[in-house]
Image 1 (cartoon, rainbow, N blue to C red):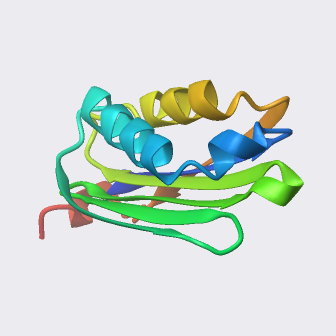
Image 2 (spheres, rainbow, N blue to C red):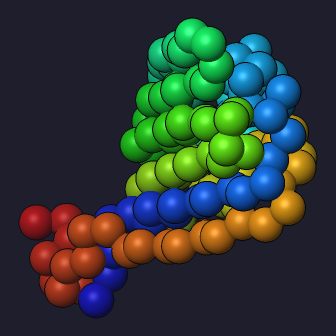
Length: 122
């Protein structure tokens, strides 16, 4: 069996509330992490909520990176979905973790598009 992509779900707890509310810092960390991961950024949309919190998406040629933050709870949810074997989604996580400085985190990796080997390329 072979997969078409990998989907990483990162949860970050006990984060710096100021960093979780810094839309520019988040966008910069996500973009730098994407480039370091070997991803090709095609577009971006980020939004700051009132009174606090950020949501954002980077559309990459290999799929997408998304984030949603809750500064009042010290929590962030980060998803990185990539296709292909020549990418390293953990570099996106490292950039975000460096910004947010979580007390703890959780990482789940899902294989996406798992098809019998003979099916890929048909």
